Length: 218
Image (tube, rainbow, N blue to C red; front, side, top):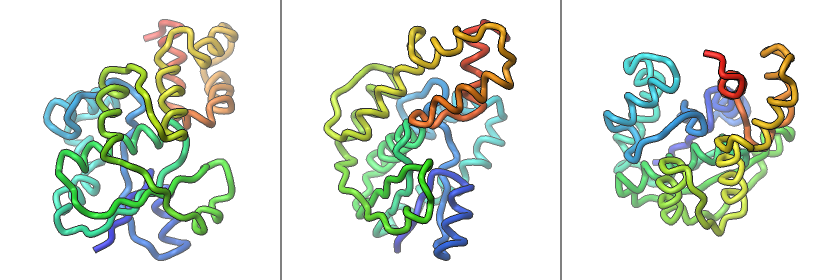
């Protein structure tokens, strides 16, 4: 059995419309907020629900399609992962790789990487890339849990790690950009951040949280 996993429900709908492929979306945003060492255990779920300001029940409902897939990994021969090259998608990929390692997945893993800022029809012609995903699980703990830099041979992931860590640096590029516009409204500044964060793949929610953190607004 082959199962396709995508970077979100919007891409899921597009892929289904274009190809008829039914897929499972990974409805998380691992680039936003703290992370614990064991994805989807009780501690992880509690913390991530708190990050997203939802109840644990609502969080589980949102993640249930992915978790159902995880519970059936021993029946899946091949996984095809459709994710962007931005930091947002790459941090989600690190989490998925960690989940696969924790469950000792023995099947084939194919990763299709694409730039969401380019015409999506090109994605259908892209071949999967060879990624040693088992070695990347070490990055999950170093980067996402500890928020420390780590060596990486994959250039796309290496760049994503740099961008991710820069977000949580008080003197990082986007934090400095926020300080340049102390009087700009949150709505307008979100637009500025979104325009300047295509590599990061910043969401409007995370942009707002960054603004309020820098401005120390509760």
